[in-house]
Each structure stands twice: as C-alpha cells, then as structure tokens.
Image (cartoon, rainbow, N blue to C red):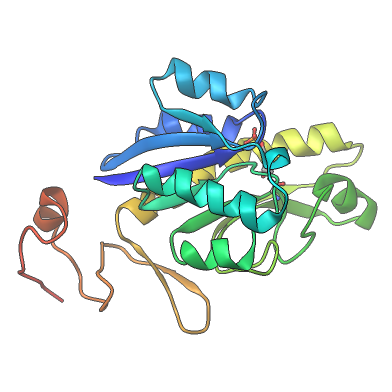
Length: 226
Ligand code: GAR
C-alpha cells in the first residue's frame, strides 16, 4: 500500500479527483495546506482524511517553512507527495528530499507558459492548443520530467474562465491517471529526464514485477521475470 500526501492551497478540485479515483493500492495519508481557509480541507475532513495546516506566514524564511512542511509530510510516511494547486515555491532542499516522488500539475502545456496566469497568457499569445501537464518536480520552477499532458483547443471567443474550465476538466482526468501509474510502479525517469510509462510495474533495476508480488507488497517475494 502506497501512502500519498496531497498538498493544496485552495479549492482542491484536483485533490478531490484523486481521492474520488479510489486508486487500488493507494491510501491518502493526509491533505496538508499552507492556508487554514483552503476549501479543499473541508472535503478531505468530510472524507475521513487527516488534514493539517502549515501556515507559511508563521515562518521567517522559505527554508524554515519547508522544513516544517517536510516534518509534517514525513509524519505521515509519504511514498508520494502530490502538489495539487499548492501555490508556494519550494526550496531546492525540499525538492531534493522528495526527488522522484514529488508530482505537480500545471495548467499549461509545459514548457509553454510556466508561472502564473497561464490561461490569460495562452489567449493573448494566440495559441490554438493549450492544456495541462503532470510532471515530476525539480528545483527549476514548472520544469521537470513530464508524465502526462492533456491538450484542449483554444476556441474563438474564449475568455480566461471558459478556457480554464476546459483545462480543469482535463486536469481531473490526467492527475489521477499519473498517480495511478506511480502507485502501480510503472513510471521511470531516464538519465535524460524523460518519463517512461511501462505496461507493467518495474523495480529500480528495470525488472518487471509480477502482479502477485505487487499485490503482496514490497519484498514479499523475490521471484522476477523479465
Ligand atoms: C489547478 O488549475 C492547477 O493546475 C493550478 O492551480 C489550480 C488548482 O485548482 N496549479 C498551478 O497553477 C501550479 N503552478 P484546484 O485547487 O481546484 O486543484
């Protein structure tokens, strides 16, 4: 069973989509917010998920905030940390601590439109295709190995609200998918920083893990097949 900790800052609709996906082999260990008024905390609590608030305003530096955040995450024993609308820039030290097990969703087709106001900028740029990206987090903002992307059209007459709603619908589809792949052990990151999605689970050495082993959990059986 993989423990997932989800970080949010507000509405939490991506967190909801992941919770509602009820991914086999995954348990949502906690939902943590940097804001006590994040709407998503109510949904999590109503679904019996542990919640915590680590208020960034209570800390003198990013480093101090990230250290407290990491302590709270680790108290839940996270195998995977999922950033779902978590609107804080994280320090390099924090990102490295969770290297390879820290996912983010960004509302654009990265590497286009990193940063804020992606939908407005896409409309202003006149692009015909826009979308969302789930990626592993690296120290560089909105960068890092891409797991999955969804593309939506930018239609004549679109405003920020219409376009963001179209993208959000796709976010709710691709984020649970990416988390499912991670939980199933199907993602590896190559030395070149590309993500491979395997048909079946693989271990760190690239060996396929038979389904029975996966069901029994880590180390339950040593048999391997290629
Ligand atoms: C989502 O659109 C997500 O892609 C975006 O914030 C929104 C959160 O919505 N994230 C970022 O912009 C991160 N750079 P939600 O709270 O309803 O999931």
